[in-house]
Length: 301
Ligand SMILES: O=C(O)CCC(=O)C(=O)O
Image 1 (cartoon, protein in one colour):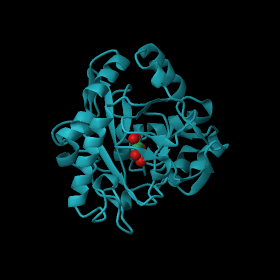
Image 2: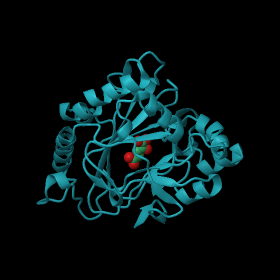
Image 3: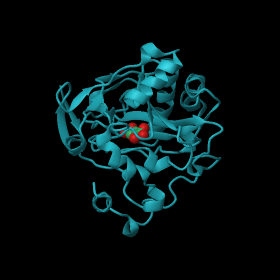
Image 4: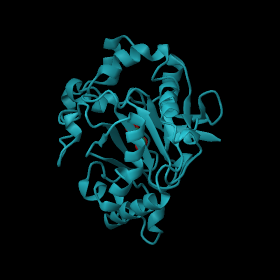
């Protein structure tokens, strides 16, 4: 199966794109899950969240998008069919939608809190800001570490990526870069790019939009799965490089990404409170933004 990823196309199961290891069988054994996170840099957990809640949340978001005129009239709302040339709809951090009770039941529901309290071994906190995405045709996410966007607080911060419904690979799903969190070949990337802060340094956040360049330079493969289902989650740390496959369909890919950390740890102030300030400097003044190629040259990578 050929899979489009940014400017490249890979064969699933070929040398550049493999299949994620699942950790669902370890659920309930938090020591084993912690070891797996150290080894792999991510946990793919199937069915962690009640799928009925995920579908209800999907219905609520799609209904909202329909009311915004973002869906093709006369098509089933849950399918999220975009009109010709349909692009993304701004849902990110939009509290009216991200904090709707149907969304909260998923994004900060009992399943995720129970998981993180066991995994962290203490009380967990989640950022108030929720990243909700409706990804349009031919859109994708470039490779990055999350630490560059949210690295001012706990060093035990984790991202949870939640597909809001059954999501096949061609609709744009997350892919992890094998070894990017611990392999020595990525060490300099972690020490340079991985120490940057987009609001302080005003550098573009994506390390690259070319997934091939990264594995040719640093090794490893991209790893993903042919199909995510409602209720599945992908959990990963701040130094696991990830990107998405390209949405080549005519349906919006709906997903959310949320963050959890120990409640007693320092918290990145940009993402908590009633109205989180978010990125206050990054991308605000194009003239001051630094291109990633310029930053890479300065870092010597
Ligand atoms: O959903 C996406 O395309 C990107 C998500 C992401 O980068 C994240 O969860 O950190």
